Image 1 (spheres, helix red, strand yellow):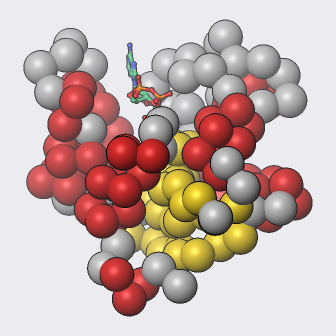
Image 2 (image 1 turned 45 degrees about the vertical axis):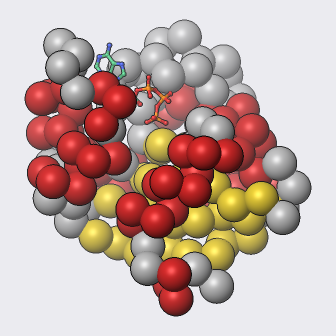
Length: 137
Ligand code: ATP
């Protein structure tokens, strides 16, 4: 079974949408393999978003992801990576299709509620970055 990392970003937690969004993933059939609420520091935020270093929105993105607690988790299931990505919808909430998480709850490029790993390589890297091996069960 494939595993993927999700981050319910600070906007999601602040808007009290974490439970509703986790419920969508569970209703789809994905299993929670790890879950925790944490305050992200800049070092972790910069490592997670390293591929965007140097882009004009990078500093704002790090301010955003460190701006309040996040709920980070690992979901497991058949084709979990692409299933989660399709449930999230397009990056920009304005463009995301209705019925997707971002399409239903976001109208922003940056404050788009949830991160999901975009490839098996990213999932492996991100799960190791956010969780110790014993925390994923
Ligand atoms: P994520 O990696 O969070 O799942 P994604 O893969 O859909 O999102 P990326 O292109 O990897 O999108 O961008 C990472 C995150 O950076 C986005 O989710 C969003 O929060 C932020 N972001 C991306 N592009 C912009 C932009 N042009 N302006 C502001 N924020 C942006």
